[in-house]
Amino acid sequence: MKRFHSVSINNRSGRLILLAALLLTLTSASFAQQKKKAEQAPLYFPPYGSWEQREPEKMGFDTTELNNAIKFAIENEIDYPVDLRIAILNTYGREPGFRIMGPVIDRGEPSGVIVRNGYIVASWGDIERPEITFSATKSYLSTVAGLAYDYGLIEVEDKVWKNVTDGTFNGPHNSKITWEHLLNQSSDWSGTLFGVPDWADRPPRTGTPDDWQRRELLEPGTAYEYNDVRVNLLAYSLLQVYRRPLPVILKERIMDPIGASTTWRWNGYDNSWITIDGQMIQSVSGGAHFGGGMIISTLDHARFGLLFLRNGEWNGKRLVSEEWIRKATSPSPANSSYGYMWWLLTGSTKWKGVPDSVFYAVGMGGNYVIVDQPNDMVVVVRWINPSKIGEMMTMIVKSQK
Image (tube, rainbow, N blue to C red; front, side, top):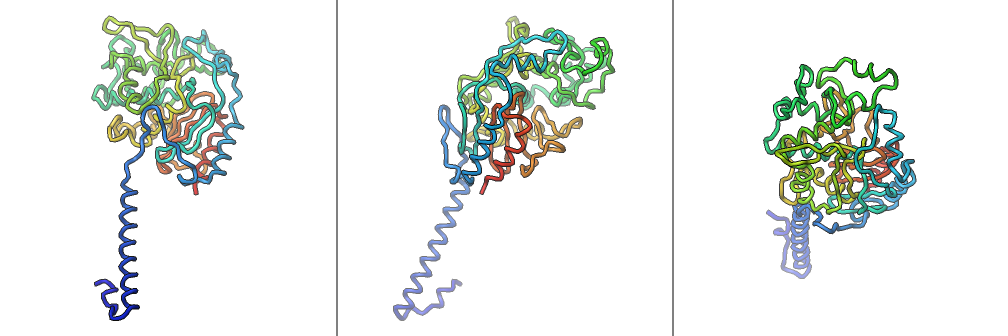
């Protein structure tokens, strides 16, 4: 029984009390309905060619604090020359027989974008300029592997030799390698791909090429080793499965559906063309260690990050399975900070005040695509000093009101 039923209405005062009670009840009910509708409002996904921006204050940020984080990113720009070939040669030039085999373009100024609830709340620099992204490419390669998994073309526990039958995975060691080993960089595959032997990629500071070639091979799955030759081997192996160019697969199934621009490119090497079913197809690279890899804008990076923020769904359409995303962002046995070519916030890589569940793509030169599901955020940063990214993310998270 409602309380106002007991109120007398035999006088003007009583009638006013009753009217006030009725208005209060109706107002409360209307507020509850509006709140429910707001909670059930459809998620925003930017259409092709546009992206709605909203004021930081309206999206739960302190504008001053957020601007301080952006200023921090700009002031802590990576000390790289505009000509990135110089940076690549300075980093990898000591490797035996090293040469740049794929396209490399000059870099631009620092840029970035912060997305909250699907909307852009802040950006800086030229966010439409396509930029080389180095090893952030690996997370795109991982996603192409995820599509193969979702379509039943591969199982991560399967030995790769079952799909790649040209001898690349022959031998007592290489025949043990699974797709998962390639994805979490624990395969210790031994061989030469596109003229580069595995041992020539980031060799030890001591010893000789003879020493490196005679090293004892580690059991697949037991030791993590960052190695671009083996990452390129994953791309090569997936090409054997799809029998179509990987950039075409990515474009059709991911980039076009999420409304990416037409300016991104995924390149391989001048000598990475192979024959598949009588056609010459370029096997792409998983980074720009030797040149190549993804050249992509900050905005397109953000769309890719938003897809993962939404657990693989875009505007009501499932593009990547939640099962795959869960696998890709789970700690690997050989490295708890690494999944399937996504980095995780575990162990020594934690950022103060940032949720442990954050995962991110990262490339040389301070190229980041950061997915923060608890705070419903995607943060893309280009050309920041990598030692400062944790501090910047802490500032962004703290800027929330």
